[in-house]
Image (cartoon, rainbow, N blue to C red; front, side, top):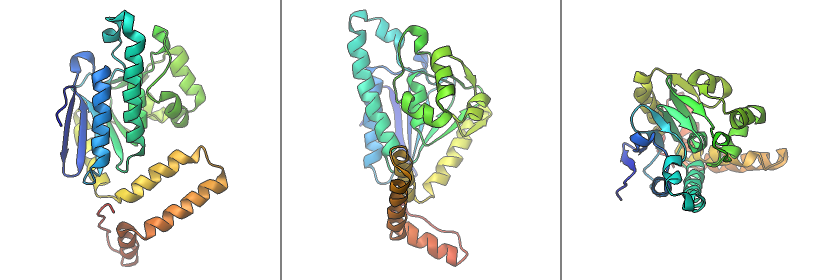
Length: 263
């Protein structure tokens, strides 16, 4: 299908989703949220996809959150627009978080509001040194959305999450890495190459095992120790029966590099 607010493509097992609203700093309106949900589902349903890359168009913003300016232009419908936008966005984030393929965020610029949630829901994040990170919800009298109250406390803890929400602190890229929001910070001119390098590493990996890792981590907070260890046991047994598991164990025995096919 074609998208109006996204640039979407799949090449060499990598799906790339770019929020293409540079003049709005890739802010999310209802259509963008709906298309993000559709793109997420398209990636999840495509067995050839072994990595998904999320980014924003241009070099100003990864995603500046919800399109507040657009919503404010229709004050009579702000509540219904926000309800519709968050519904689609949360649908997208749920799919990204649970899909089998690892999701990699290429953070090219400002991240604010729901953009934090979109980035936090990704499995890995690489940021340009020029990137900035902020919440900004309470700055305009609103409360968080986009999964941020679920992912951020797990990534950076409650104290730091509250600092973002209550004081609207703006973090530099280096601060975001020190806090645990991103995995790596690189020079702006190196971002695309670094994202591509990591994407190709993920594509070559055991996609089925990656999917199980994601599920185990998502279930860990709701499980007690014994429940989680049962899930771990069931998962590793299942993976040992997979083509990649068998190939990986044999390669280890033979002191060879494994070749994974993603199943």
